[in-house]
Length: 291
Image (cartoon, rainbow, N blue to C red; front, side, top):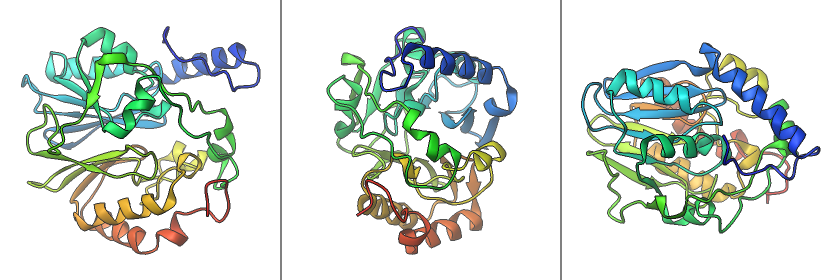
């Protein structure tokens, strides 16, 4: 992506960024890491290597919305899937939050589609060039993805006036029947999206369905109702409150930012257990953001 924020913290600077870019370009051409999952007739999940995006709307209809934008170099794959399903650009792009693996293809998609972007008002400083996220914490343990997290960019991006705050009434533009739920902890302005009618949930990274700290779990997509990625979560008390808030909604279907979709009793029981035992199941035993 030509306008990508340079990853200046990386050892080797531009060389390391070029290596990452080549790697992601190769990943974008591999079907297993760009798999499509129909969760409901109007809710499709697309995997972009290590993170998921959602396409919300009935195929063939004019009104649909993209939730999150995945990692770099998946803009073409996202647009291709959208064209197959909808034959037109979305009404909007809604962000659960602005971490690098959720906005990586955002600039490319904005330039392609020229549509508005929405996020929680507390997330806007990280999306308008005013602030950076906390640095990732590779000391939390859990596997290779966590140990490698010192390489992950924490810089915010600058969308200027292309991004705006979600409506204060908790409605979601272009997504009738859905409400946004403030679920901070992973980031201060993190949101999840919920539809009461069928109890469908787009959780973002408030909780996820694989152990994102483990490279093996990510590769195999091992199902596990899991707390937010530990290496990028600075406020564990808020994160626990958010999981309890989502568990109280009793979702029947869930798409999360990482891992496969989950539904029914496996989802509800796993989420209820996580909400009860978050301190032992999710919070790392050590780390720079652990109290």
